[in-house]
Length: 178
Ligand SMILES: Cc1cc2nc3c(=O)[nH]c(=O)nc-3n(C[C@H](O)[C@H](O)[C@H](O)COP(=O)(O)O)c2cc1C
Image 1 (cartoon, rainbow, N blue to C red):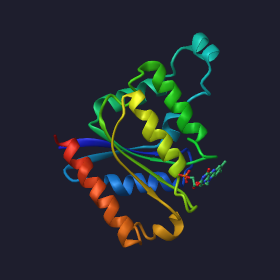
Image 2 (image 1 turned 120 degrees about the vertical axis):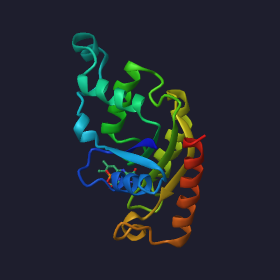
Image 3 (image 1 turned 30 degrees about the vertical axis):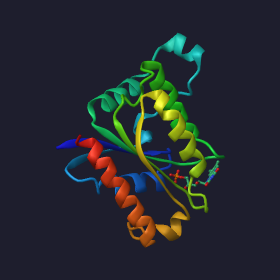
């Protein structure tokens, strides 16, 4: 049995990305899912001076330990002004100060959703191209546009999107178990 982390790249309590990440991770077969909420790993704003003075915060170390002990990730990124949310980027910055291989070469299914028609595609593309520099192995990516129409009662309403995500989950499963 493999263990995967489901993470929404947002500190919103009602994060639609966290919902999508958990929904997707629960569809990965033969795995246990650990849901990571960024609010449980609150971190000060990264700055070199802060780090010199105070060192690495305990929450960053704990999250890094969790990442080290898992087998893979389902991460759904929220998009703020075409990029990562401040909370996710801050977490990434702290984690990269512990180990540049933040994602430890483990398989990742990368997702994004937003209420708009682009479904967070800008941040998704950005992460897809940069995560490999942080030890990320992005197996597949998927963006769900128009969240509030596309995801109703914990289900994807559009058959084509549902099928596309299902294929990507299968691909991720294969890598997780290879
Ligand atoms: C400051 C701010 C900037 C945003 N910028 C974008 C954006 O660039 N693209 C987009 O699709 N949605 C944008 N949105 C809308 C978010 O996609 C929406 O708030 C979504 O719920 C965020 O995901 P979350 O619920 O997982 O936090 C923005 C929202 C905020 C508050």
